[in-house]
Image 1 (spheres, one colour):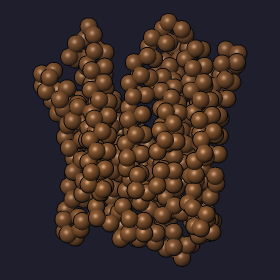
Image 2 (cartoon, one colour):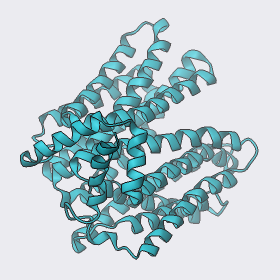
Image 3 (cartoon, one colour):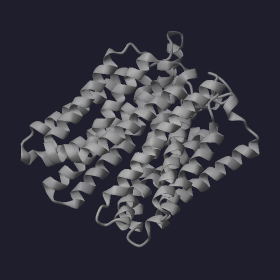
Image 4 (tube, helix red, strand yellow):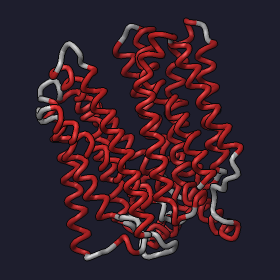
Amino acid sequence: MGHFRLLVVGNGISAYGSYLNMVALNVFIYHVTGSALTAGLFMAVRLVTSVLAGFVAGRLVSTRDRKRLMVGADLTQALALLALLLAPDGARVGLLFALAVITGSCSTLSQVALRTSVPEIVGSEHRARANGLLVTGRSLAMIAGFASSGLVVAQLGYSTAFALDAVTFVISASVLFLLPVRTRAAAEDAAETGAAGAEQEEAGAAGGFARTLLRTAPLLAVMIAVRAVDGLGSSSHNVALPIYSDGLDPAHPATFISQFWATWAIGNIVAQQLFGRVTKKTGRTPGERAFALGACLMSAAFIVVFAGLPTVPTLIAALVAGMADGFTEIVYVSRLQAAPDAERGRLFGLSASAENTGFGLGMIVSAALLESFSPLQVVAAFHGLAIALCVVLLAVLLGRGRTPTRSQDRPGGRDDRPARDVSTAEGRSS
């Protein structure tokens, strides 16, 4: 785990730059063009690219060297930011849209490759703990990135923000390159993994993979669907938060937003600490049932945040939402990582596309609905949909009388077999 902790630090540093740049780029493109439509198009291009990149990334990480892919993705983003810095003012708008494509595709590729590689880096038995460390690192990076973005841009300017982001990508790439970590299955499984990966690459499109997954591993398919609907919910509270905060205190609209995200991030970190201790003590990783319960609690807590309660209970709800969010993230990623190495990349690629699709669609729909409905109504509708889907998943699990936590930690265990059937069935159907 020592090498992995260094990897977490490098990943957290690049995540800090990404969160910093998320704010700086959106403000910069509006500053340069003076057009809210152009700024919206920039975000749309990046999001659509992320959705499409998920399908491509799944195939790439199944057949290519994942460490090289992650290093290449970081360096590509650093070079793109450098090109933006050196470009004349007249060429910057076009480069910004090129940067949206590059950052959207490379960030998705890097995320899919890293999640797919975790069981090979730390061992399958330590994957839940490793995922918790990644969640903590990104939560801390989010706090630092959002908190410092205004100060960096206001005091040092956009160029400094972009240069700082480029440096964080170089640091992340350097850490990855120097660490002696294995990102693929052991040598004795290489032939099987390579053959399965080649079969997957030759197989049908992502839609065929999704249909095959639904037929052979329906619970995994439903979990991915829940994450997509969670993306809808996440977009609703992200869009509604500034409106709700402005209504609470028009003179200081940023106050509640800062309190909310800081409390949410603390909850994420607390969840990782508790999760790590419990799994270390019991030797078991929670499965689908815990995921569904955690997702229900998370969505319910987000709804409570917008219910107009006093500050203290609202922040308690934000803390619970952060804890449940962190818990479900770890459980979900760990569950997908229980799949064999050859199929894991396609699962995470499909998951990334589903989550980004849900988030992007939710941004558009929730923004439109907020013109006519209150933040509470919009957030309750979107998160209520996630709760309903989780209730369906729980009903299916209870109906089957399953106990998924007992087998999914064992390589080749009962919960691994449906995922293993995905590539086999897909090869037959093609």
